[in-house]
Structures are given as C-alpha cells and as structure tokens.
Image (tube, rainbow, N blue to C red; front, side, top):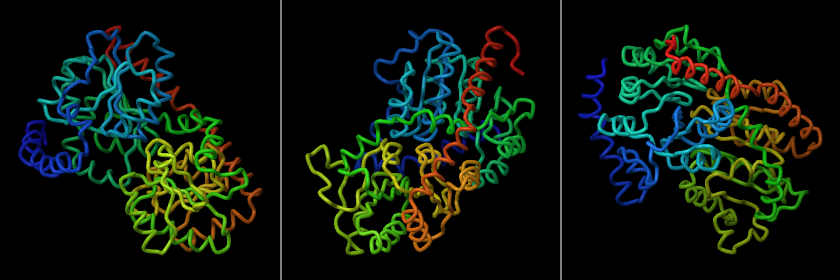
Amino acid sequence: MNLLAYNVLLHTIVGPFLAIYYLPRILFQGKYRRSLAGKLGRLPEGFVPERLTRPRLWFHAVSVGEAVALGPVVRRMKELMPGASIIVSTGTETGQDKAQYSIPEADGLLYLPLDFPACVNKVVDAIRPDLFVLMETELWPNLIHRLKERGAVIALANGRISDRSFPRYRRLRRLFGPILGGMDLLLMGSELDAVRITEMGAPSDRVHVTGNTKFDAALGQVPYDAEKQVREVLDLDSSAQVLVAGSTHPGENEVVLDAYRELSKRFPELILIVVPRHVEKTETIVAAMRHRGMEPAFLRSRYEEGERRNGRKVVIIDRTGELFRIYSVASVVFVGGSLVPHGGQNILEPAAWGKIVLFGPSMEDFREARDILVSAGAGIQISDAQQLAAQVARILEASQRWDDQGQRGRTEILKHVGSADRTARLLADLLAARLRGIPSD
C-alpha cells in the first residue's frame, strides 16, 4: 500500500468514521473540545514558531505514559544542546496536561494534527523542525512524509512493539516498511522490540537498543514531600493500612471491590484508594459499590469543595495526574490494565516508592519491569479477586518483611536507569551530523 492508497482510504473510510464517532461526543458530551482545533491543524494562541531559535526539536508523546517517558529525554537534550528550542506535541488532553507539568523545558506545547495532509502540512511547514522524535510507536505516514520533504531528521525513541500490535504491523509491512525506511534512527526499548521493528521493514543498521526511559522517569520524579501532602488531604495517619488500586480498567474495578470486601472482614480499618485509568469511569465504580451494598466513597475532587473523608474507607481519585503521588501512602499496590487484555500499566511508579506491586497476567507492555520485580520478590502476579485478597492479606500480616522486599525491588529498578542519557546522546549525534551536512545513514 503506497501513500496514495493510504490517503484514499483515509478520506473515504477513516474520515467519515471519525466524524460519526467524535462529533456527537464533541457536541453533546463536551469531550475533546480543548484539542479539536489543534487536531485540525491550528497552532496554539501565542505559539509563534518563527520566534524559536534553531535547532528546533519536536517531540511527540501521544498520552500520559509517553509524556512521562519523554521528560528525562528532554531534560538531557537541553543539557547537551542548551540553545535548542523544544516543541512537544501530544495526542490527548490528559497527555497535554501531563506534558505541561512534567516537561517545563518545552518552548511550545501543541496537539498533534490528524494525519490528513490538510492538517499536517500547515503545522509542519510552520514549525520546520530540524529533528522530529516519536515516542514509543506512532507511525503517521503523511506526517513523516511531510517532515522528510521539509528536511527534518526523524527518530523513534523508547520504541516498543506490543504483542497485540505486532501481527497487525507485520501484515501491513507494505505500508509501514517505506515509512520505517524513511526514519533516520530507531531507538528501541528491548532486543525483542528491535527484532520486531526490523521484521516490519526498518533498516537494521539504524536500529539501536537503548532501554526504557520510563525507568529514568520513575526514579527521577519521586517527590519526597508527596506522602505528607497526600496523608493530609485524605486524612490518613502514618499507621494506616492502605491498598491502592492504580490505573484500573472496567472489569478490574469490580475485582478490586470484591477483594476489598473480603479483606475488610480481617482488616476492618483497611483503606482502599481506587485510581481509575479514566476518571470518567468514576460513576461506574460508585454504581458498583452501591450494587454491592458498600458505604459511599469519598471522591478526591470534593476536597477542594470543603468535604473531608470523615472515616470513609473507600476513596476514589477522580482527578488526573495524582496517581504517582498516591502510591506514596500505599501499604500494597495493585496495578490495573493487567486483569483485562490491555498489556498492563506502569508498575515502575509504585516500585519507585519501594512498594510491593500486584498485577494480573496481561503485562506484555511492561514485560521487562515485571520480570525485574518478580525476580526481586517485589512483584506478584494474581488472576482474580480471591488471589488478590489472599496476597494482600499475606503482605499486611508481615509488613516489615514485605517492606524490605519492596525496597529490594526499587534497588533493582535503579540498576536499569540510564536510557534517557543514551537516547539523548544518539539523538544529539544524529542532529549534529545532519547540521554538518553529513548523511545520517
């Protein structure tokens, strides 16, 4: 499939489908309104690319996880190239919020335009980046084509090819092969990712394994005043036993609630803090609690309205950007996206606090971190509510021993820090070669 065929498909099938799906949500539910103009190719008010110094480095992080992983790379790039301008784009509104908070070095923040030539071309032509970096794996044919036409060097960083996406990418090798062939550098998170992207059509001499920058991000963002602040907001004393269920998805919230009901028989003072992956699912958790005859939960958003927990045992964090800090008060953590076939969520964040981490069997996206924590005795796989309750009970009954195991997991994670530096150096070398007029490959 060539670019012409891709664009025919984009305009005749994908475009109408996007309109049917998104327009009602924009008009009647108020979703995506903040990002709509940017998605259509409009630059943010006050962002004037012509005023930016060169070289101009444009990084794209689709959502929250990628923005977190990007932070240490940008900081290291700024150290290596202090005169460079940094532009960061995201694909989601939550990603934009995270980037604004965690990447203060950015000279400009915008939404990545939809991959239609009319949207992409005017943004690329306005920014004219010297270097464009995609975090993880988002391959947009029209975007990459226009960037190459405008002379940018293009790299993939923290590259990851999941078990779920690899068969699809391989079937579409005729489309993605030329796209990957047009990229100047592909920095992959693991040897398996490197093999997979080569099989998808990437030139093997441009593929390097640099590791996962999420290790750097997790260990580099620990705010040691967070625990005190969280305990104050949620009225938790230092002896409170707390189960944190982070990044939970539909189907997992019910498992967590069932496990908690069983645990509360043995640990009546146990606090449950649920942090759903998508805050708009809060009402479904509230409904599930009501269906089980549980006492109402305390919603985090009510704190600013003057409401307090007042002894309620279940807390729902219905605000974005707080999960990492919430982990600081946990006695034990369950990380979601793992009991449903989602590939897992970031288990490095609780591990950075030295916590024992429980997760389900679907951990393909965090395979390396899972293996490290399991080997250190700081990660435990469970498969249902009964196992979750049993493992949490074991940990709560011997907290000191498990605290030591959690710290051992943190120590092992520390050994894998350094990917951000390796990534930034290779990106800086790539750009320097191009600026000197030396072919990048």
